Length: 488
Image (cartoon, rainbow, N blue to C red; front, top):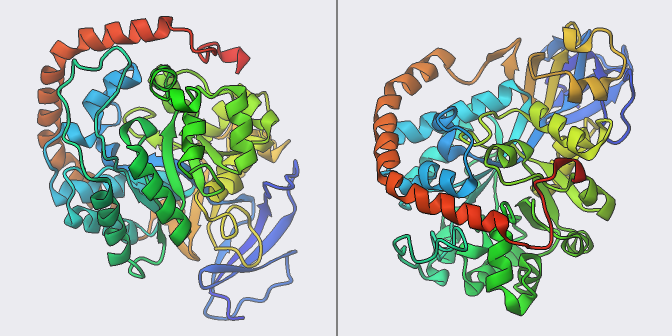
């Protein structure tokens, strides 16, 4: 094989067989795939191959964020901790006027840049495009192509938008227009087909936002399309206690269970990923495990939005396939899997191995790319992050996984390879003009800031009702309590 890139002398960390001091290996890359992983001196690079000196570096599979939204990356730092339902009224695209193409491109690029600089090589983007505009989809996907990052893209669309935010808020908010389920499915699949074959690192999934804002007909159509085209499906499930309360009240035919409802409409299977999953009961976890479905945990945003703590240890004990996500930039405020891994490990009582596996192979499986990503092995896609071991986080190197999860904040990422291409080279992005991007963001922010302030003023009269609804919801008995951290 003709090698195009050689990574020389790195310690290679495998999420399936982690070692305290991983063996030193050379990694040969041919095109977009790993061709060989061998002891030093076994691989002779051809003259045209680029050689990366990775001595004193740790090679890990590119991190995979199994749950992310590109649409609010410019709102990081804008919100103090607040309940999820209050945050939704301020942050998500339907609250805002339609954005310019420049802003859409900038927000995708800045999110991709932040991800790459912290070792994330793949994002699962549940993107809200509101109002729907094919040109905006074009702008998003072109920005991902230009950044070079890998993405599993899903349009986040439901046919009953805005309904049932909180069980005690119904009737207080103005009703949103309802869309035809079949029309929406046709529109989504039309976009998928329109972009087929145009983006080598982008694949498609389906993104019903949450069962509460999707009719049974729509979810059934999503299930049919997923089965027919082998598409992964991503959906927010039981993110907050309000979701559990609504399920008990509105899904009586399914025993008050969103999981049973999803199973009945044909969605609960190996292609389905529940995002968040904070308020599942034990029987529901066992049903998820038996179905082969995945759960993408987002501990950072769950804490900031006061949604509770997902039962990480219980998921692992039940045999659920677990992944990790970084969620919205305005409610986790960081596209940083090191933070997510540390919280996962602390909440589960794990030494770090399961957190690292969830952030790599587990997340790759959840987004439908488990056979391609998640390990540094011959035949897999060449998505690799190289971290300097000449950093206080790894000095001395006592246990690579534990220090990666508990000590490293993302500071030591030096090189990032996606599809066999160096996208971060000694800390600098290679595919973008970083300074120009920062200038674009600064130029675009005044308009976004003005719109945000108008939204704050518009929402101010609603906040007492939202706060009261949250207070009453917290007092409800839904059979479990996910506010008690040490029991999760």
